Length: 337
Length: 206
Image (tube, rainbow over all chains, first blue to last red; front, side):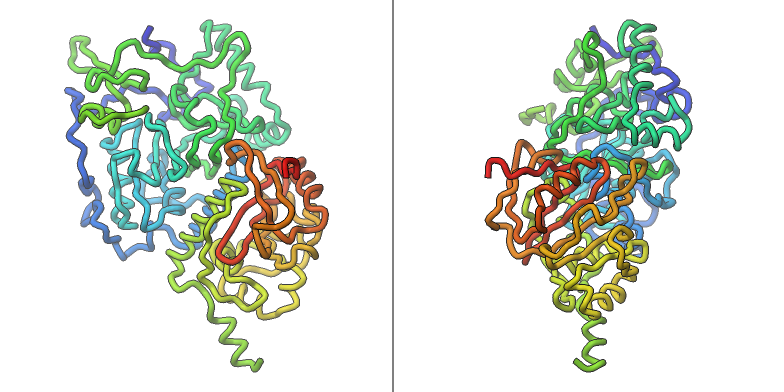
């Protein structure tokens, strides 16, 4: 069956109400015919004035926008996060020239690691051509002059909102996640002092109770995104609102994964080759979404699909969420997803 | 050395390109930390007063500032030029108690205090710990460490030399504290490798 169960909304404890970014919305912003433009080799500039992968940074800013002291502070937090996989390191998040909820945490992490030789890809729900992705790509093209790309395999740094690319990432790539609510226990226990203690004591009972209540109510674990994981057998971590379809890609990945939460002022990390286990029960093992139909555009199977509403008479189609993979497939390139 | 020479030694020897040099050094450190035991190329890019090495100096200029108290090992602490250079280029406070330090710089592994003397962080905030930057002679030492843990595909090996006395037991005790504990960066000429607290270190299979 097509298990894209939009009727079973995520429970409020997973931010259905509070975190707008967490609700698994259909991609209403996409064009009705769902046909994306051909992959632009250089993304079009979106910020005023100039920018857009010209190769020349706007010299009114420091390289990659942030000042050097801020970068040092963020870099120190990143190193601690890597040394303590899954632990949320507090950091002095700065105001960025974009609103909270638009990826200020991810942008700060990207700005702190980015160098002139990097090639940057930015995706929003798998797509290179949505507002958030285009704006952030333009931001770094302007402030750092880095090369940008939509191709997963050409990128050295990939900033993402809510997806992990289908193509297996390599050890030469860093994946930077935008995180709205980094604390996996937050909707079960609102007090930071308490959740901090729970992490310190490795006391994760309430998380299992939450998943059990899902089973008692729905017959299965109804959490479909931001599905909690256990990192290296120690810290329960929020993988950011990626669909649980993507959770297995984090386990023993070749690529370093960094997570930035700007409003909540936390940075955390999963080093490469680290055990990342989605929480489950022996008699209710973790399962990912499955899709019965292939992508309506490229025919890919075994990939995450978005539902696109095509008219007001109930017409719909399911297409790849990963726009780069979809374009490559349609261009006839072999892809080992 | 006259006053003028000392002063110029203090003022010079920083990064030629502070923004890009710091970024390059950081990526090397991040790569090393994310892949414990991997020997990463690290271009010194600084000229600090001896016995501080260019590689240790480069990491200092990349990560230290007024927010990071720094502890100096015995050999470095006896040279006022090292402290002056660090203070001028990074603004870091120099502390004498190892457990007050965000970073520790040591150039004489055999004379280092035990790892537990440094800040280990708390159970609530394990990140409030010391990162040790230890200059060593070589990564081809006589004792081969076997490493397992996050960042390592199966197992890997590293042979840093010289090491603190009783290092294996100290490292095991450090890992047993996880998530508390200290993280270590070892530097030699042109190279860097990391042993974060998450790494399980044994000598089996050596």
